Length: 467
Image (cartoon, rainbow, N blue to C red):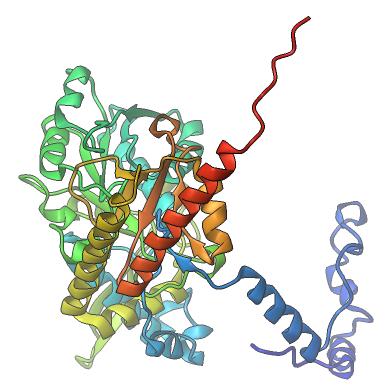
């Protein structure tokens, strides 16, 4: 709610009604040595006018930039109606159906979301969302190990988002699960199916297949999926949902389709908003449905024949015995899912395809402009969606800093993730970029490269001291 409604008089009246002198008396069962005491570094409370000004100043401090960074969080146009509807009271405050059947509207929305995501991914069933894409991948790895029973190893391509790989290791590492990393082809920027031959007859619970991968390159998903199934392993697809509007969905990869599909739902109507909250999606084939964490909403009819919605499967320990629970970290990121459902309903399949196609076209145009600059070249030659890796003829950090002074976020520096690529950045263009935006970026990058090169050429040379 936008304000705190209780005055001091209200609080005293409520305390008097229940026979307590202070709010602290309500927590007297907590031993004093466990209490943290007063918070000494929290500033005094502010009035409405002061707090509104403070939050406005902090929002403005983020600045307004022309953004060419993607890397898992993407700037798409969000129709005004999406969040106007999402923040209505019936959605904004009632999005977690613990006593589910009393929240028919919320359940119907989640049911529609599941239907849309199952259709988008080509899978049999979707749950009602996860924390984010990274933890959804970790949960898929746990699903695979539970399903496989005889192997506790996961094959993870180096082309999977580095943060996703880090999160997976953090979650499964203490559960005696080994994550084996696969190298990528330095020319095409993808995992070559023949690189898997070295594993011979070794058993794996699953092979992770990103589409597109972190470099923006499209993987050879059919061959990778078939290889996984030939080894009695699950195929776990990690997909950008916007890309699935124009690419073959995971459920149709190879001869049998991927077994699990996960990813980050942020492109579907969720603003970048300084890093979150976002939500992860997860869908799977029917045989794995009881291994899938989270809630699954079902549609039924009541005794009068009227349609109704219920929690069909509830895999959390709050609903079932802890020993039977498939996960204790999954959640229903209901507010984000509400926005995504409304976004997909408003845009429709054709709208999603147009957005994906325009993003792809803008990225190709951007690459053409960038490669016309001296020393700038695309590193990988594999087919792509709406991101690409380019190398620069100058230190990346200096170039990106210069661009930022011109109100442009020029891309993601890959030095910390893939140092073998040298001065490389990951650039992204979505449907939000106009021809003028692309031209402006190319012009400013050209100037930035000249400025950085000039500055480096005039830097004092190192002096060798001899003794």
